[in-house]
Image (cartoon, rainbow, N blue to C red):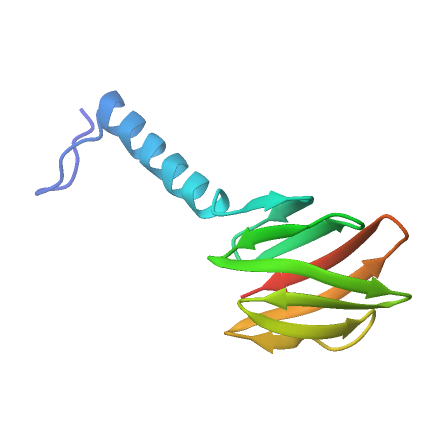
Length: 118
């Protein structure tokens, strides 16, 4: 008979299920911390890509801070992240705001795509 090592309780199907559900809940909680208005977010554990719609009041909450599109012209945009305004250019090195790295991925006539990472 296969017995667990001394001092360890065997994992019953109920315990396995509870462990799986707890892991899924934690993973979902980490990814759900994003919300947006006039924007869409695609988040992982350490980075979010925020796609702002141009011509509307576009904002998103990621990693507990608000990011807002202030304006865009050609390949340069002004966004506000955690209360600080940044001027970003496509291809420019990441700007640091409150421990977050912010880069401008692309600008089109209809949207602005920004990457925010921890």
